[in-house]
Length: 113
Length: 108
Image 1 (cartoon, one colour):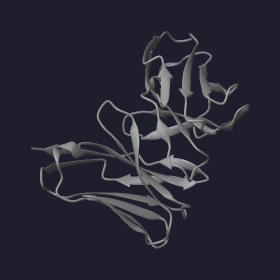
Image 2 (cartoon, one colour; image 1 turned 90 degrees about the vertical axis):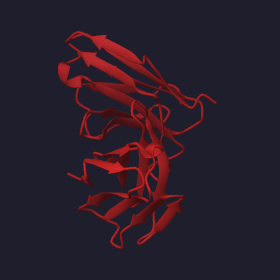
Image 3 (tube, chains in turn blue, brown; image 1 turned 180 degrees about the vertical axis):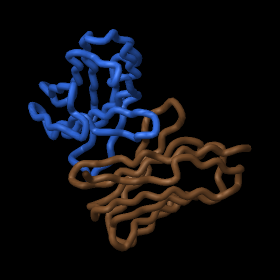
């Protein structure tokens, strides 16, 4: 099992450009999450999904969109990147909800210039 | 809003010394989880506490959940260089809110 994988590992964008981050899990987990991690601020939840075809907003959803067309994939989109979105992005999945441990991907380091 | 506060932000210890990080919430938590993130790595689940006053041990690590389910602590006895990393608590208010983490550095 690969667990949770993320593509790409690194990316540099210019302000205003768009991109999609891909997360894939092979554990048949229902729940998937997108977090961003900034120095000194821990992990902040951007969006999450409780199952295929469903998404919900987290703590910091502005400027991001998500889609969960297939159970194993969770996509995070930035329509018009801003320097404030420079961060490390982690995807995670769990069997069910918040009473279950989350398995994290290796992260994507995004820089917006 | 709902927040989980974690202290200290940094801790530097000599190998063999003990280490403790604390997590506090103004709201009663359903449960709390602890994660460890090695430098350059991703968070890895350590443990979950659910019951009021619960204490769990994993070798040199001791985790406690307060009686009011509003605070928690992680204590490491006799730190080793392999303990280096950032330790996060994550409090459950239906969704998880992560604390800002405690970065532990261990000098050999």
